[in-house]
Length: 227
Image (cartoon, rainbow, N blue to C red; front, side, top):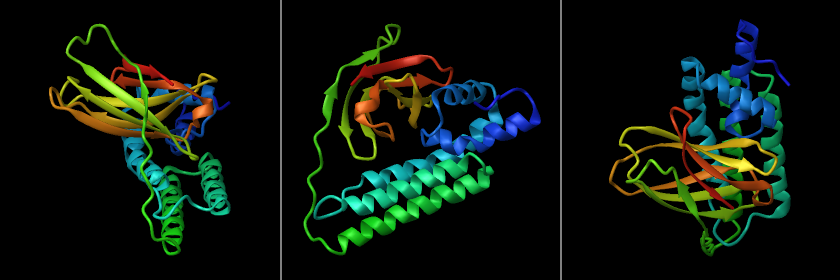
């Protein structure tokens, strides 16, 4: 495991690991070390914020159903292999290379989806989420939430509907794996009394997932649910 101590070299290593972290590709111990450092490092949090939209776009492209049916298995395997390879290389690259690799992987998925659509002509039916009981922190009396998950071949999608979270406050979603790993699944901003619908994605498969958590910018647990 990389030793993330307060040295320039260790800090550089941590920054280079942010791409793998946002895709959920770090081992549990290293992911926890990254999370601990992010709580105290404004610079790394800012760089993580730059990575997250690209990773979310990639997840969105991978979950978007191609018209006419599922992606052929062989093509799906090629996409997954390309993304997995990019994630492995990301551990050894700079942040700029991480962003470039993520964008390239996203472009690969776009090409794959367009290729499938070229051979099909009917619209796929959107899957129905499986309901999840949501536990809200007891002190948040005015907060309500419902959630459901959709299992995909690439991971999990958590659909969260909530009201009452402080307007303007930042929140981060995580999927908790059976082995204890805590994998980022997206971020959002509270909208107060208004209803907010969030589609959160993680590359953790349902068979390997225990539940999800929502935490505030102080890393305090706001709500959670078990799969």
